[in-house]
Amino acid sequence: MSEKNNRLTTGWGAPVGDNQNSQTAGQRGPALIQDVHLLEKLAHFNRERVPERVVHAKGAGAHGYFEVTNDLSQYTKADFLSEVGKRTPMFIRFSTVAGELGSSDTVRDPRGFAVKFYTEEGNYDLVGNNTPVFFIRDAIKFPDFIHTQKRDPKTHLKNPTAVWDFWSLSPESLHQVTILMSDRGIPATLRHQHGFGSHTFKWVNDKGEGVWVKYHFKTEQGIKNLDVDLAAKLAGENPDYHTEDLFNAIENGDFPAWKLCVQIMPLEDANTYKWDPFDVTKVWSQKDYPLIEVGRMVLDRNPENYFAEVEQATFSPGTLVPGIEPSPDKMLQGRLFAYSDAARYRVGANHQHLPINRPKVEVNNHQRDGQMRFDGNGGGSVYYEPNSFNGPTESPEHKVTPYEVSGQVGEHSYSHDDHYTQAGDLYRLLSEDERTRLVNNIVGAMKPVERDDIKLRQIGHFYKADPEYGTRIAEGLGLAVPVQN
Image (tube, rainbow, N blue to C red):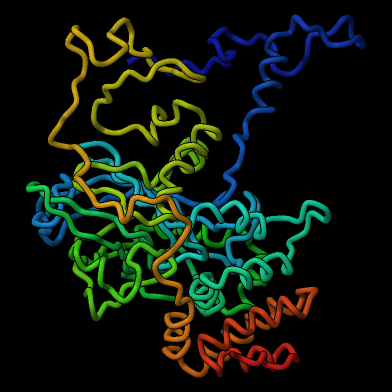
């Protein structure tokens, strides 16, 4: 075996003669444009940062495996779920939602929980959060919502007035706001939190029969959360606290694990259930649809290179495999487009060819060209379909199953507008200490809001969820409880 070549080269492999001094016109003269190594080095340096994610910019990741522990093949033909004991390699990226790339890990924010399964029928991405619901239920509102979570275009500061103005004018956010402002708004570590697919998906078996499904990853480490004062202290002293904890745990052999469970709903129940099962601001009662164990996810390997793996990893809820299909969830429908589109912009049209995103199975399609196409680009093979040259052919057995469309008129409406019952139920489930911390967190977050009418409008939502809930927040803010009609 030959010795490793340790010679410094340019990007095109030519040896570098001097990496300490630029070529100049004389000792004190200007740099020469013929110094191509200098130009390449500086130009590449300027481009070392791909545009950061609009959301979920700050994240940590790890490799692991998923092992099936319960046979649910009567519900789905997904190959990686086909038999007990089957293991599938996977990669996960945890993240905060609102902060920039350099923001603190311990802020109050939902956590992204994005899992990529490298299955034998292509990659499957389950792109969720550590909460079972979300702030909005329609993707058309997502850009506006995220604008309120980011920086004010004039001051370049976070803007609590915008945050609470949007939430108070979007009462469907109340359930998620209650979760976010509770103890679970700041997980102690990435290992001590649950994960959820949040959306409703459709499972289809090998007979073409379907069910609706929701995913729940239950942490085997137990739920632990951070006290607000400790979280603030860590944000200043160790803003990478969660990233460090995850890396060290895996490095030390303390492999975190989650049990994956699902709720399964017969298709016909969607027409009669008390909640719209495709509204991501709502949960399904586990009394109505109990959790069923599927398998176990274990994280046992850290990335070798953060940029190549964690930063260049791309996820989309539209990255599906046979046996798993979308639902009419309006938020999900928008994400099916937006996530892959963001990846094409941020990383490039060929992002799925990168090692971290590349499936373990052979890819056969007619996508060609584009920036950074670094493989053979299909060579001289046939580049269109249908064709007469023995190119890749479709698999009719994997067509998306037929589904009903409710009505034939384009409309902007929802079948259910009760935004208060589930938020109130959650409030009443909390202990008195948990309620007190929840109220204090909300009061502290709302005090900087500049207008009382926004505060009062939001207090009205809390009051509709539970009179005690709204009254305590009003008292904390020194405001009268709004008269409820």
